[in-house]
Image 1: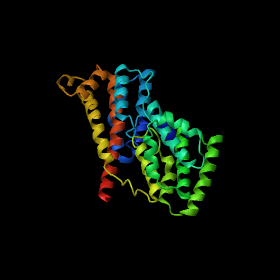
Image 2 (image 1 turned 90 degrees about the horizontal axis):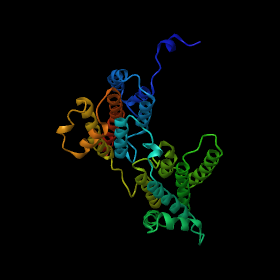
Image 3 (image 1 turned 180 degrees about the vertical axis):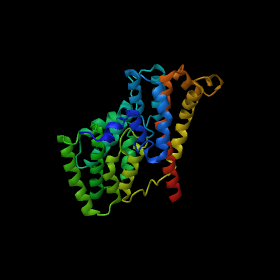
Image 4 (image 1 turned 90 degrees about the vertical axis):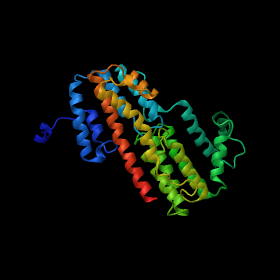
Length: 324
């Protein structure tokens, strides 16, 4: 039997759950409650929201500030909101990764595998690299970072390959054969690394591969790969590429140009667009089109979930700059 509390507490809609998640507004305490209270009347006014609009809402949820194509994703979502139709659009997470970006990820992976196979005079990796990296730019970059080889470096590179392999395969289900094989390989290699370097900060970074920082859809993916590879090559964590600490400020600033334009469209119900001269704002106004109750909620929701992440990015950057 359901408890009285469960009977009286209304079930949250997906957009409401998203607002309260820690990676959105949840980590900001009362601000999550305030955002929910601000959006709720817009949601209620927009009812009934048809299936197409709910699909747009789902696509909005898919976009996060860390996405490598954040700006393109926002523009695509503005178009979807304007049309109240998300048919055929790909935003956020793995859906955002283009063939060209996959090609670069594969070039990193195959170069690392090729570096490991140094005792083999001819292998299939060379054939792949002729297609993926014909000018050898990525190969030379990675080989220069790795420097002179030794057994510990090889083990760390093998562990990094497993990190990339996980994402190249689209990630495995927990109980799949691939996941079991992956865990076994990871365990065996990490045991070997710990035997040679028990306090390895490089291994600690590699062990965190599941937290999303190495996902190809992250805007910092290739910088993160380079940090790990150069650390392996130097034998010391971040000896070559130090922490910048200001990434959050830069990301927040980039995002603000888009959010302020959408927010302005919502506040003025599209009426202030004629007075705007910058191309980005004019484009966003044109894509959103004539406002109505559904569009006003969807646009407000898009701004809200990214604004929460923007605030988090600024706070993290402030804390990192303070420590430097």
